[in-house]
Length: 359
Image (cartoon, rainbow, N blue to C red; front, side, top):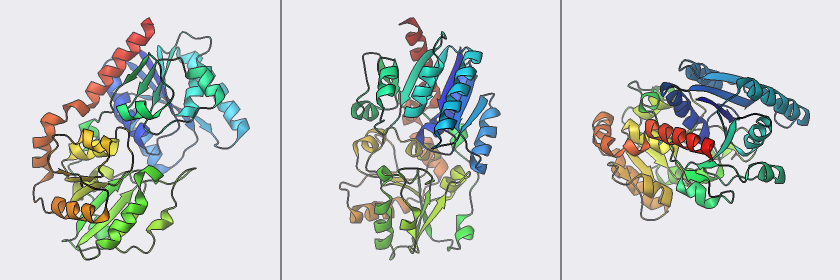
């Protein structure tokens, strides 16, 4: 089967991280896979990820749309149309509202089946997007993503995100203590995610402030470029909290850390949390339905009863006192992580592709 995935870029985020695991796994399953990146992005981090995914025989095509330029958007649509007509894919799987429209228009007069994947946040479709896509077979990355989005039909299916352990777990450690100049006995608390409102980073700031009497240091990995992002200045002046921005060594950072933290007010199927599970790091997660669902049977995972600063502080202290190695924790988690393996996710995607071709 020839499969094309269309998304904005590889700068970071849930859909990008999913595809970094999903596309190579679909290649391993005997498919020919292409990744079309619509937006211009020359960050070093993105270049490294493109090189990494190409090493798994995933073909990457860059269209270099200049965000905010109408002319560039029209030109990108034309390039997308030409690419899809040339590729003659069996399945075109789009990710992100704008890319659903590119895929829908780009597959006109082709035999390709277009399938949008809807990720966690409620997607906002314009009238054109609704007209082009609302009757198509769709994949939702989680039950919560399905429930909060208005665009669903009888051909919709929920396929939970998965993780490729070999890609997200590192046997190496970063050296944040030396990089930031903190003592060896300071506990490292790390979180991963773009600076968007649902990640609840103002709560991190409050939490760090009440933990000044505790020997811990908070680190946030995540980008902020684009509309709808929180200004990273909220972290300024907090001595025990460091914003690291976008990092290419996140697995190594998690491997060095003592605790993974998510204070999110909403998640779909949280990729970063799944990666933390596979890495064997103790976790403290906010008491939201999505975290509670994925944390079932996961040892060394602590969820406060209430969404209050003091409750989070208490759980962080417990998590940091585990004393168990990441390897031993991961081994005990392993039987319960099979449902989140990328192999399972990829097989369900392929099965849905085949079903959609028959409709």
